[in-house]
Figure 1: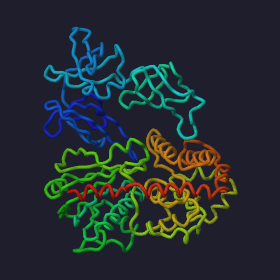
Figure 2: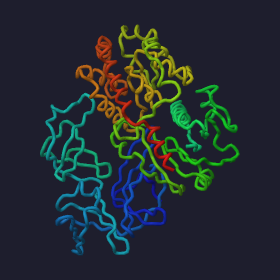
Figure 3: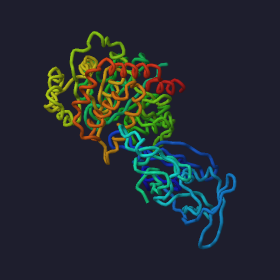
Figure 4: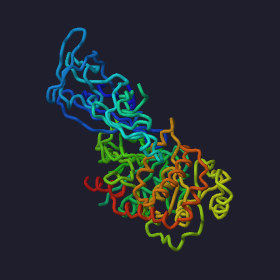
Length: 185
Length: 332
């Protein structure tokens, strides 16, 4: 059993008798010290998807899977190819199935692929990724009166808030669970 | 529509949980006058204390809102509509009855001004025990969000021009420390304060009607949490919000989000910066002496009040929380 608040992209859970892979998972700090998880999950059998919210302390039944590290090698249209560097086995995955993984996926990036009965069903990232900032306003132009963060875009196109001292070309470490800036690399 | 509604609420701390739940119940009762509105709570005495004389233990055809203790012999029948306030779910004995008798379970979360909350409007809510339709709402200030609660029994028609300004400052905060840094000049402004900011508010108690009247009669409101904040949003009177302190300073994000939300209502950028300075200091983000900022705003009080009047006008054009709830109740 795991708590909903521990869910990450790539986890597989049992819900209403079906198996679902988590495609998007967002942790929301609610009022007081409670939290909710907003997740998009896909039924492994019939490919239907559900957007649903759950209390962070909701207990869920997770499923044991076979996990393998794979490297992103190329994209072709809507299809993304990954390779197991030990066995050289390759798989192709549709963008829709990768969910939030795409926010942080760069060439040669590592993805943890989960297999259920030898079928790839879920895709997750390492806890952190290092990405280059491709756009942000100069620090002095940031509005520090309300929020000491400014918007920035990284090489994958993902946008997030960064401290005012971060500049274009800087490499930053991002928490892949929260999508938030952690530090400069 | 004549659908009865059960509202479950567990009181964690302070009065906000009970106060806000009462307002939700009252707004629904105002809309569905012939329906029974039942509150189930682990703290009935606080509900009665907040609104003496308005409620009673259930009797047939009660014109009031009924308040029951949770676990009162488990003679629970379940209404068609069930609300769970602030992520509270009743235990499996109640859930079993709800699954048999009710049509929908609606979760109403704590308020947040953060943008992420917009996406959760009417989203299905997962609970392993519930087998009926579920929806989730997060009260929020942004357009197209779940909206904020508009009060139904007294506040909307309250003649603020008659009551206002009876008091200079109404201060009801978790932490009065940031105000202590104010100068003597500000102390003089506080002489007419309803609450003595130097004494513990735990020793002071006002019923909901009394508190509403005080808030609507003040020149400034220094408010906290959710219940008084929601009331202040509709008042058109300048207020400064102290958010509930969360672990790892997570409440800073709520304060920043509100600062961003209110920004377009300010025409004077200097005024906005001063306002943010006061709010951020009140929440421990800054350690400023806010005397100068406050006096700047006080000198231009008419302009500051205009900001809050404009915000009130904005809310009047948005769908309220109860309208969003009712849309889903009426489709049943």
